[in-house]
Image (tube, rainbow, N blue to C red; front, side, top):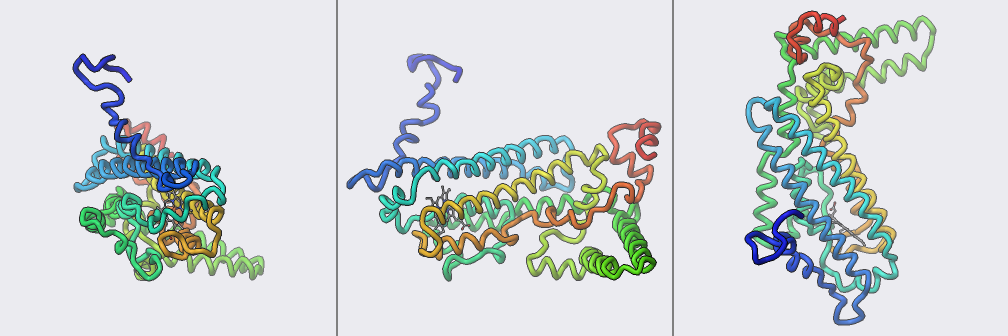
Length: 371
Ligand code: HEM
């Protein structure tokens, strides 16, 4: 680290700046009075490293959220947003890899100090809950801890207040939803993407059906009928709303249309950053799901699948139930793959929208792009 080389000169030394005296005296094994189990040090360091990185992720998320607050997201901010989301992605990759380091501890070694830990449990990680809530994990989708809700484990008023605030503030999911609803091209009196998309899909399905009838192919007929039903779930706003109510979709109907528009027309320059951002949001969801999975495997390896965890839940069984789609915040982005259509079938952009989505004012270039 650059800076003054001794404490006589003004400024901080490395250890002072990083408060290393405090940081490095925070590893206090509970097994110290007895056998002082070697692996407990690794156990503590690993958890502390996780908590530090959770803190950094929260800092990044809280810096991004205000950028979505206004009527429009300034295009100039898109680079900053994607850079920070990408940073979160890289941190999560690191967190996924760290599981393997703790797995170098064997169940027998863990057993040496495991009994000292009760009732402490990762279930009480405040920052993990803040992270989930800030991203947009919905309360009603959570699996309860035994019979209790996760909030009940927090007794410290400051922690309770922070959880409360994290419920009240707009999650990243809500902010992204507002932004997607404003996607250029959705305007009914403009390009009217949704009507055009529905027409194209319907005629694609009609053509498939005609072929099935001509070839007397019952299995293709069945496939077409199934596809129609699936597309109906996004065409019909009432079905979509019911799926949102059941927790099978997250975004509003309009936001879903915006996301699909960006997916399909992402080759247009003004959608490049937007598409990249949606991609990173999926990465975040994927990596957290992978962490949950790696953690469950580690738990099974350390304590098996039948015993309760230190927090009193069914441990492994509870954690396994958190692997389902109910914990995926940007679930709809994953499922968009069902509704994409080939580039060759896309409704062509109007010159006016092509201009909006372009970064050039040069009409010839736009014409070239449209051709
Ligand atoms: C030997 C290693 C570990 C074991 C045996 C273990 C065990 C468990 C168990 C059994 C639970 C369920 C709650 C309970 O009954 O206590 C749990 C939850 C949790 N653990 Fe771990 N854990 C380990 C390492 C870690 C690490 C390194 C972290 C990093 C921060 C962590 C974070 C969490 C979190 C955040 C939860 C709550 C998950 C949720 O509710 O979705 N655990 N852990």
